[in-house]
Image (tube, rainbow, N blue to C red):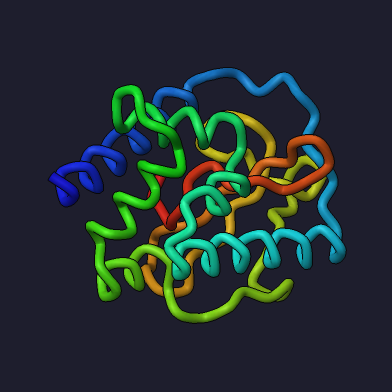
Length: 160
């Protein structure tokens, strides 16, 4: 059941991100700077700490609004925190490391594209930042700025 939930969450996230990427991007991107890079790295590290501690509520607090919707959509009528805690339990220690890695992130790990305003367009079609994951080539953390804070689109590394 738990392995199925992990697989289902990953599939739902991939489908949601793929469909959302088809939308147009009329909003102006957030300008990212070195202070922004520090805050983004701290957000990723806070997420990793919450996941390592098995704290689904703290992990969900770091997700964007759309991220919580994606996670909650993986399990009918369940909270984001419960879904994340089920994924953590289902992944086990070894599997969790594959999802979040073992190294902390620093501002140097956050590389802004030189495109519009110094930010990428994340798979949701919104301006944001993509931070390559250290542990799995070809996967990334995706972050959006909401209410002046950086929030993750998914609670783990993912491909587009």
